[in-house]
Image (cartoon, rainbow, N blue to C red; front, top):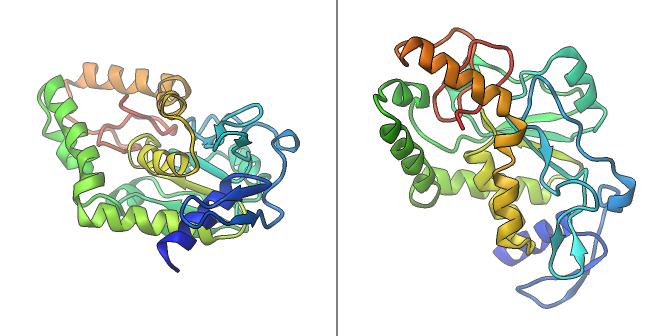
Length: 260
């Protein structure tokens, strides 16, 4: 599939009605039952065991895109690790996802494997190389932590593996029929970058994209607080047994957490 076709397909997957491909200029009809009116789709449920689970289209009428269009809700969901409770698993199954895209590494998956909703295919597309928890375990200051995150986020642009992984992720989202859930561990860095690409592709403005990115601070507030408390209590010298890692830090809880 050519780049222009992939881009047009992604646009159609996110925007309802007729849209114009930025590359071809041709009017394209939106296909498929997934593309329902925003008014017909409820906001994404708030989950306890995957607290950063949300709809990339936002809430209410959906984010504005490409002028008069709005993103359709119920099409693409983002999340932290799907270490779901029974109740949350049933809730996600009610959304009828066709596929779960897990962007984590092998060690992260082994530590906290997904509970994949019934009827959904599972795909692992690894974005970053190396043991992220090991890298985080070597941190000795707040500035080192900030620089690690800056470095990891730069890799989304500079690393061949990250670029290829993101390309595969966006292509699967564009081509797969039915709702999609994609995630990393905390649902903010790898997931946040993929969300940025998708929202930018369909013309969501930069302020809206940034505000959506920062919603992790609201959705995962309790997890962030627990992570900070754990680091303060242990001096960052040990890793707790139950974990969720996006950039390495973990909390001793069944609830995936973001380090902020």
